[in-house]
Image 1: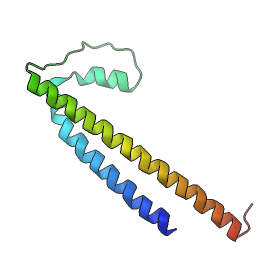
Image 2 (image 1 turned 90 degrees about the horizontal axis):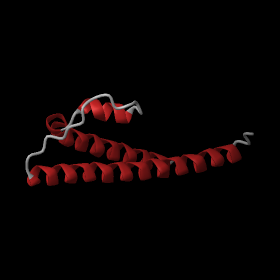
Image 3 (image 1 turned 45 degrees about the horizontal axis):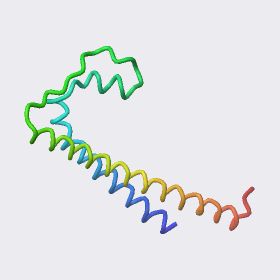
Image 4 (image 1 turned 90 degrees about the vertical axis):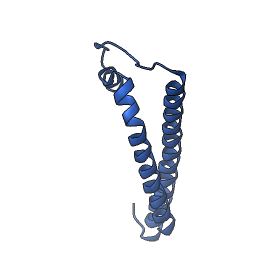
Length: 103
């Protein structure tokens, strides 16, 4: 149970880091991208809006790419933490079943 609690805290921390990163990226998305198209893509709908990316210089392009890659890295790490948490939970459930003769 201690291992699960430790992993739960690690997962919570990763969620927090990812959320903070998303708020860093949000102003760029709002200024540079058509969010209606992003919504269409996200919810697997036909794209019915004009696609645009309003980037006028390489520095902004590079920064946007870096921010997107940062979020991708955060999401990958968060997923790993959730997988570790699920693995520990499965082991904990099996141990409880064995200890208390469940099922």
